[in-house]
Structures are given as structure tokens and as C-alpha cells.
Image (tube, rainbow, N blue to C red):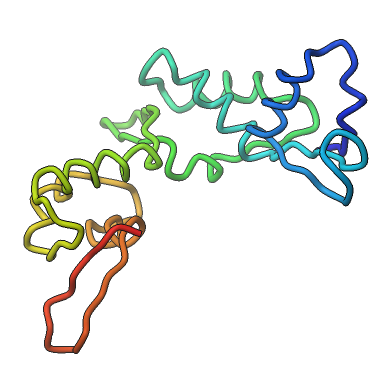
Amino acid sequence: MNSWAFWRFDGFPRRLALHCLEVYGGQVGEGNGSNGRAWVLDERRVCIHFARVVLKGGKMKIESFMDEWMKKIPAGMSASFEMLEGEVLVERLGVETWIRAFSVSSLPPLLLIVLQCSLGATEWEWKDLQPYIRDLRIPGLSSEGLLLKYTRKTQPTSDAEPVFSAR
């Protein structure tokens, strides 16, 4: 969405403006951040922020969510449901579809802390990990796929049991 020079944010506290730009945007061009470099908002980050705001109240019917979400998206930005991959869970109950916030990004630190505390190791075999992740359901990912998203798989030989370690 637009490129703004930092100095154009007159009337806003510098620290607040910089925080918002760092969280929801990025720098483009050359120069330093306060003078010559421009900032752009990342449409996906902004849209995810507003989706979280809408879902803060809990589970919603998908139609209601989409209506509320679209009203909150800033003019000039276009949101798509695909942007929310890894940020929401979709539940189908009969003919109704419900949505609730559930960010995959909140899983790895918790999962790794549990594993490190429980197993006291930095590497784990599948049989040791499976009980911890078998109940995690992320649309489009198997348990092993979810594990591979946040760990590194090592298998010295084709006969050896694979070992997973933190990235």
C-alpha cells in the first residue's frame, strides 16, 4: 500500500508511528529509516491484525466474520480468506461453518518447551514426539508435516530412524 517517508507522520508520536510501521510494514528504498527510506504496509499483516480483532470475541459464523472483517479492512486493501492460513481454524458443524482464532505461530515455542522439559533432549525420534502432536489438527497438514514445519529432520542413512531437532 503506499510508500511513506517517516518524516510525513507529523502529529503522531515518533515511537508509536515507528512501532506500527515495523509491525505492519517494512522499509523500501535506500537511505536510513528516519530520512531517506520509505515505508510500505504489508497488506497480509494488516488484514491478519483486523481478523484477530474481529475474532477476539470468540468463535463466529464464517459469514458474520467475513462481513465484520471486510468492514474493518482499510480502504485500498483487499483481504482474502487465504491470507488467514495458519491463523484460524475452520469448523463445519452440520450446514454451518464456524471460524475461530488459532495461530500456528504460537505452537512451536510451547511445543518445543514441552518437549525439552519432558524429554530433556534436543533431538527426538518420531515415536517420542508422536504422543505430543497427534491431537494437533491444522487444515492441510499431517502430524509429520506440522512437525517438519518447525523442526529439522535428520536421517544419516536410509535404514536409520529419523531424528527431529529444533530449527
